[in-house]
Length: 355
Image 1 (cartoon, rainbow, N blue to C red):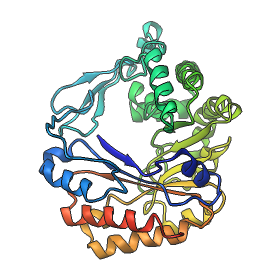
Image 2 (image 1 turned 60 degrees about the vertical axis):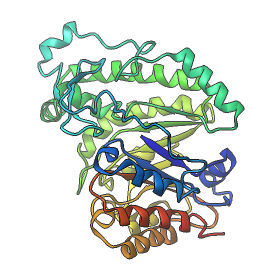
Image 3 (image 1 turned 30 degrees about the vertical axis):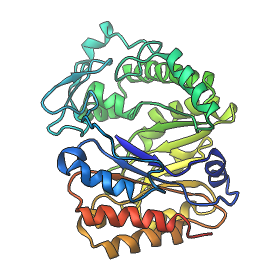
């Protein structure tokens, strides 16, 4: 995945998060690997070269080889270290879990959790190399991130049990659920301790809890089973003085207060599914928003003018001169090239809106 973050300096990022009048709005533009099958790579490379603010120092590679994540390879099932089997029908697009190792609770008595000293859940991890990389990047003045895998708690439980079975477990108050949460939390906490040992600046804690019109899990069961684990995971990060970045896709109206409780510094959420006015009313001037720019309607199907209007509206309503706004866009197949250009143009233009 090609990604650019125009939070080129740690100082500007921290000033954004702390409402200390940054020089510009940090902008991140992600290009999913699948795009290099859908578009001619040279078309994307040309757009990247034409937008140096978004892609500082980028030069078209002399040789380009497509690569895909282990769980994003077409028709190549992948079994992760939790025993979940991933499948996808498009190279570059992360698949979904089709085989759940705990679909039968009888399997739990012999189930082995992965070793957090050797695995991040998806595959192998080398913590010594991670620390060395952090030390190198710190010396270069770069921002250091520690990322839990996407779907670390609730989604991991879904992958292990299956969505419908898990929700029924919660309603039925399945006794083994508490033990499952405890063991998942221990695995996640071990990862977080390694992030803190490496002295990262930001710990990112991502998983999707929302759908189009509401949450994937009801409020009561989120508070009962998921939030307490979140709170315990956040505690050492907060005590170490690190930035906490929380992510969830989907409509978060019902769960948002519980999600950010416990010292979340940055909330990364989607714009139109939550509503720009709702986001502004909830967070503007209080909590830093890492706003996920629409990928469902305006950018794939609208006009360049509508894209410009959308991004300007978001900057005007959610942002303020003091800071508190970051923006991110993920490019996936299907967006017309002229719209890709329009998103890049608008992100570069409005990054400096408050200067």
